[in-house]
Image 1 (spheres, rainbow, N blue to C red):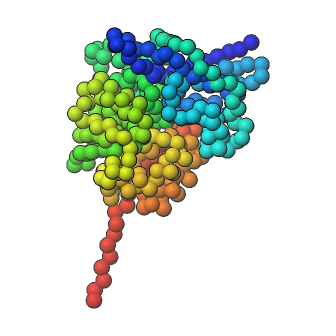
Image 2: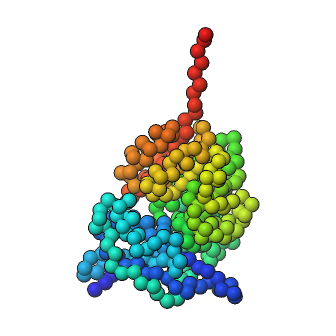
Image 3: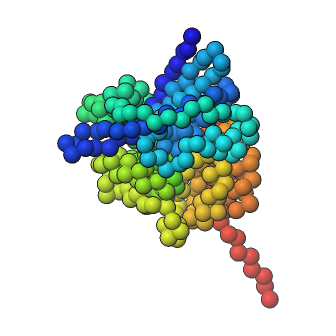
Length: 319
């Protein structure tokens, strides 16, 4: 007997008539230890998954992850990357099967899983097929779930949004610019502009994610305030008063120098995607780069942190 549970994201292209379609997709079936199930789900979405399905079988827990035909990450070694960089357990995820499947109507299959979700005190994330014209006291963020990670349904994104909401509750003189490092769907850039930031640079290595940012910026009427850019060293030549990044610990550490150097002195770095037990390691990483822990949110084993870049103190001596 097999029990299953579905979660989902969509990754859609358009034919000449404008109808979304996905010609082929990959099905990655793995056996997984229970303690790694949620993090593996997150990891798959971070690397382009369309959706995931969890199954309890007679042989143990299994997970199916569905990926677009042309995925940016090699799927044959995805479980090895997870076991090495995340779980530290060579048997945490075991590959059982990788097969190519024929066309699916992803939009019809996954729509039921995306409903409006309340986040923090006044935020609501909703897909575009829900009626957005109804009066509401909530600040609404419309997200069309595509390849870019970040729909508000995963706790790391929810915590990042809550941290943003808390940050903007006490406004400074003004927030002219924000850098969204590893933007995914663009949800954090959109939220920042709704909460009080003038403009946001939405940075990502994945061209598919940047396409999603354009779409979601349009849905929220933010075309002139959100600027998607492909990540390179040129993009990081400017310093920002606020930088936010929702990535795994290993990715935050890999990009730590760039994150710290892209922040103005006295500025704030907001990070999410960290497990609670990983926070001391991340704090040490950024402390060595002149960033001090300032605020922390935590829930169900996940954390989001705000760091402040310490202002340089210039000492003078009398001759």
